[in-house]
Image (cartoon, rainbow, N blue to C red; front, top):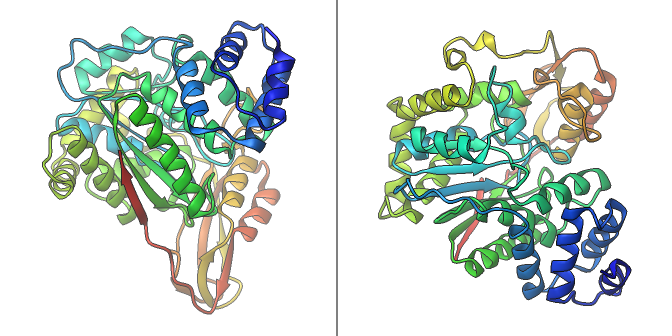
Length: 433
């Protein structure tokens, strides 16, 4: 294998051949290609991008680096959802059991925190005893018994992505359309899906800040879905403001529980119903999106989604009593408030600073192997576009004292009080295969 030749091809902005891609992915998984070789190629891809056909071969090579799951004993439509992530984005947690309560099977392989965003697996592990390290047999058993399985990649599920994902996180190579698209789609295609809903964020808290970049990412992923024969829809949603009122692992679980009981923030419920409704439509269990949204809403209001999640928690080793006794979740010992320094209207300017603030408090990873403090986070008291007076509480900081000064400085950078501000819509556009 000529690793330097492969690197030189992409360094010079040329298309990698099918053989070069397959050789590189296989070599990196086997260890013949080192992390420094892989970092160099990822940087070249970051700079020069990939052609559509090149990306399809790259994604297929990643997928074929491991096993594709099969669930012959499950006759229900297998439909999943994936979000590109952001501040307070906990939609997957109430959505999966709601979709299952309406008749879908939801095999959801999720990831850890990446960059400024929290990871679904880390949030789920804020539930006492909840296991996300599932073997393929455990994953299949949970899916068969509850309609939902919430796990991470096993060593034989897209091992190429497992290695590349971690490398991208620590080398600053996250915001690349082909790398994000291939990472997401290789994992999702390994689930043996019939259909997929993609939530692609735009705004300062998204990986693709500009809406045009988000649209390009959405269409790249939809192109891969078409290549693999999977029905898919991409929704372009707002990450110019935090989603819901909580950001931080235990705090987001609390808010997810509220949603599963028919309450919680309106924007969280709206996205759960929208994405769940589209999952039902793609899976053939609803004739229209509106019908699907209404069914998801009923599952939240009548307790059926909550009941499914209680079974999922128990099946995956957790303590379902935490749904009733919220004190079982880890909480930070100290809460401080951030107050408005003058009259004005709240406008969020830099949501990445909020993610960085949570990381400084101990709620994120700065390097591989860092242990996350599940109890820290931020609680938002004022909605974007709302008027406040000097002295009003804007947000609460849940902390243990670690990194507090740095977090405060980042929070102050994240917003502005202005004379007038018109928030962007929650959903900007949608596209389907």
